[in-house]
Length: 458
Image (cartoon, rainbow, N blue to C red):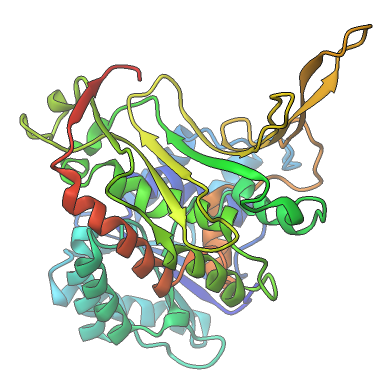
């Protein structure tokens, strides 16, 4: 961990993402002594608030999130003191995203914090806002000089950008061009929080730390791979954002393709960021889709009645399509990509199906990303008795059932922690963004020609 004084700036501090993920994650890191000793959090929003208003807001957010203090060795009332200690590091900055003056004022506020620290400070700029604001925020950051590090290893400036990064190849490249003019690649942390999930990271350990699997992790032994991200809920209050974006852009271009890349990638030279990201990018670069492949688009019944959704919307809330990796290792092996809202259950899961033997038994390795995080292997054994019959059994590893010395960190805790220490392993590179859009964009161009099937609890 970089121990230099660090200022966290959250653009959109009162928004949904900040409330659900960022503020609880920062508080948890603080409570576990995983933030720099000197730090400050500055919340940027358009509301007519003062520091105390933001403190009251965050205190309620943490209470509503019902932070679990079990195992933290706290005595009675310590949790209340912990929250107050955390809030003592929080300040408010009023501003509108398209007002250049607000960024000048913000820079002056950060300068004052640095004066209190008595030295140049790290700055982590988090965009917890709709992607429609990215361009104007980038522009105003540049004009105000907020993008310029104050110098040295203990004075970096880094930006955390949420997905979706663009709507297609052209818009993604435009954003990349703008970002690259303002920041250097080591400063840019493009978030795909699925990469930060403990179970997704464990795929690499499963594959490369267990020598029995790597020799059979190829087309010679594997029949297909099925990647699912399913949600029981609908779009909720995100209708105005989701309409026109759809499931393929919202989940397919990022979460699902990143999981595909981790399953399919070759072993990197090291497990360091640059090597791992290069291997993921190599897979995304070689993804293939043909028009003859079966593709399904769906929309759950009731989507057109959701707040913010056009009554004649053709936006898909479900998709299923195959992708192929154009390498010898994965020749002709389908990677079935599936995601949807309004489903019968919520789950994120990767199932690797091995080829059947003569006895028709099939082995499956299943990575449960959420819920019930863990890994399962379907095995076949002989039934006890005189007949030569087979019976399926499951060999499983469960995070919940296993006893670990350390807690399993939340994905956003890992995102923030890794950004502070400068580890880009779990963040998408420029190449990964470009290649994923290169694969998705041609499908999107043909998307509206496909039938849109209505479904209910699919």
